[in-house]
Length: 280
Image (cartoon, rainbow, N blue to C red; front, side):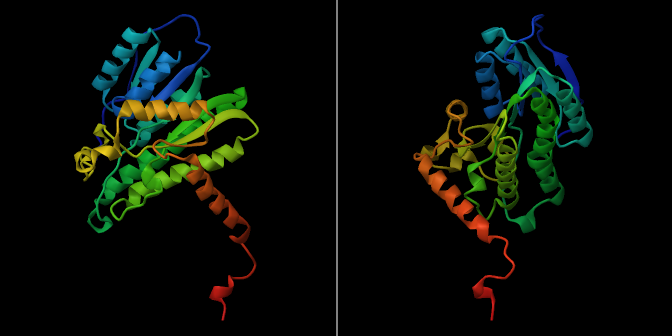
């Protein structure tokens, strides 16, 4: 997962003089794959857009297509979210704009392989992108959402948060963080109109896999979803009020059973004495 150091550039692609009642949807990792599809779908739902990714030329292409197809107002912000300075600039932009009403934390990467053979700096960049950036950008918009009493946060997790593999230690760990982080926010914001959703894609046919150590072509085709279907399903889950959207899980009761088992353990997770099996 090579991570470059492009200059931070803010460019207004189009401007509409009247404020949009839908507000601005911010999408990270918007230059390709799921992020680009989220951009298209949210523009068609009436949102103006702020698109964030490292590759400015691709961002411009996505923005131009959306403007031509929808007429929405689109800005692009080219930034490497694994770079502390550029991340701070994006945070400032999000924190200072009261028009932002939706954040899609889609930017992310992966490296698959045995941990003993991994490049520590590459893993650090992965954690920064998948965990630190998501946390800080959520924090940046949440103060405004809380003050205004509404807003939507969509956090992209992964099926590998649940299906942990020997080669996915760090990636699965970061995506498990997204689940716990989202669940905590949902509890924190339960008495407000702010919505927080976690989305669990499985294998999706995007450039995400390039350089990851696993090629998407290695999977049986019946395992691989298109980016269009994935985003459409995720937004259907959002519309239905799902806190957790597992895109290809046939029966949501399977998740409900899994989560109920987790909650059933909670009363016994902290007690004054060890469990009997640990006592002589």
